[in-house]
Amino acid sequence: MVGERVKVHDLLEIESPLSAIELSDAPSWVGESLSAIPFVVVRRARLAANGIAVGVRGNRRSERWGGVLNPAFVKRVIAPFELRAGRTCLSSERRRIPALNSLIELEAHWDSCGLLWGPGGSVGFELASGAPAASESSDLDLVVFGPEPFDSDFASKLLLSIRRISPSIDVVVESPTCGFSLDEYANNPGRDVLLRCSDIARFGNPWCVEVVSPEKQGAPVFAESGP
Image (cartoon, rainbow, N blue to C red; front, side, top):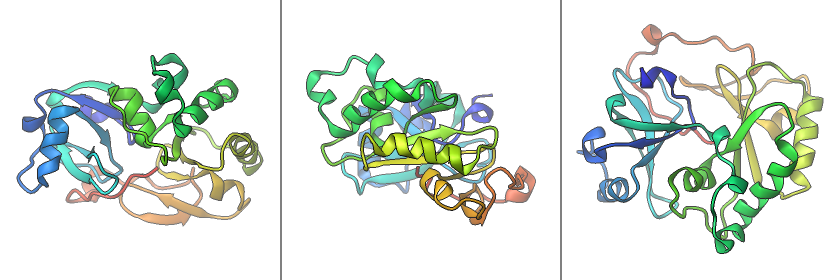
């Protein structure tokens, strides 16, 4: 089933958007946004019964809304690591947007780093949907997938290569059970870091977190997914 395959940060193209998500308590801009651009992002949250916790973007930075999507309406799933600015038909004007330009530059160095990775935030949304979302002031958010542990020395090397391109790049690493800041992990060797889990934020080792079963999770809880 689609709902079992999607992961936090995935972009979902949806069919019949006004039927796919319950909008009775949503601001008016949510329905308007979904009608214009039928894409949502999977949020970090406890499992929702028969649904996927998703976030909807509006035209303003302050317009972010969380809801539950019926998996039956998912048309396409796009993971961050499938998105590359250099392979997308961006106009010369869009390529001059700092965050998009930084991604293009980073792609030349990072596609051989040995990890799955890709853009999140406004840049990821733009590359997935084709709708302009990144602005001149947008930071570049990256998602790195770390199914196997790596040490702080490797994290520091990744961070150094990023900082050579731009200081306005934020990276979240996704282990099999949680997300955490690459910057914090690289700069605190041997120490616990803040982990973004589906049930609660906590300090610990990113690759040694107990997976909370659906039976223990209870009612859906929606939390900011970051990155």
